[in-house]
Image (cartoon, rainbow, N blue to C red):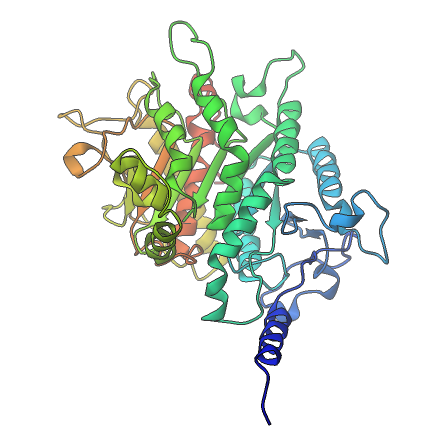
Length: 487
């Protein structure tokens, strides 16, 4: 029997459609689960938590906000409509912001926002969701040790980064399609989310006198916000905030003849293996390097890229080379920036992170993979102490230099060594270590590949990095708050 070609084509299209994941939200329940949303394995995760917009635990809260392929909140056709058959996904963003306002009215809060990347979503058993829960649990332990009374809150930003049920190699064929979707997400309601969070922070961090609490001791700050984006999630987050970042570096009046601190979008933005063209990053790099810094400012923006990230280091430039054939570029720098991500262009790098540290004195006894809660708590105590030691090492409020005037490396617990890059170290530009814009190249021993973002050593770096703003903000240096460690 002869099979017509059009029948084969129809069959292939049907198979492709059957393999696609549905374009709908995973988190549809507005009810607060009766169960504590903690579990050591996905199969034992409480059923009433699996579609919850808010997961509650004794240590932290985790909220979910999801966007469709056009960057709209779900369901796109029912925006503002009443819940249908218990589906509250249309009101995720409003509900989460309401709950954040309620939380800050009760106690200080520290918010971690995570925008996931390619091949992931907001399902309860997605490994990005699982590891984000672990990260929040560790962050809560920090607050316990600091005796800050601060509640840790996570906001997981979901989108259809995983568009196929099929595994490899089929799912890798979605790279460019999902990149386009991430751009749509960035231009959609993610902007509303970041704006709402910023407004919440500004409102909460104002004192009775109307002065921004950033000018007061860090202990009086009621809301801190850290934003994290991975892969195409980094693209979505960067596209949503890049214009404001550039603005923050070029505005501000001098204070007593000194350069004003860079205005922060939240407290810190961190992109991990970001997957977007360096042409988008170059304006931010330029304005940051053109500005003087009279004292050290904790990083406002940090991009970290593994030297072993083949997705952004090989696949990305290959694809960009093919789809920029007919584009015109004036210089080699422009051509390179149009084909590569910011973490793979030497001229835009500011620091390197590796395991060449000799062991900071304040970190003695730190364990890479703590086997017990007590060992993990001991690690976090040492990380706190080392953060304070880094602040004390500043010389007249500036990053310390050696006798030759070269910036000294900074050691983090875990033998992590952060080195500002200079022309003497290779094909780089000289980095002003007091500049709050970091673009860090990371050893493969720390991040082994594009998706290896949850290794114990990298998580340890993130924990310590996010505390940098606490210890090193200009306000904290002017009126430092003493950390009360448990005896």
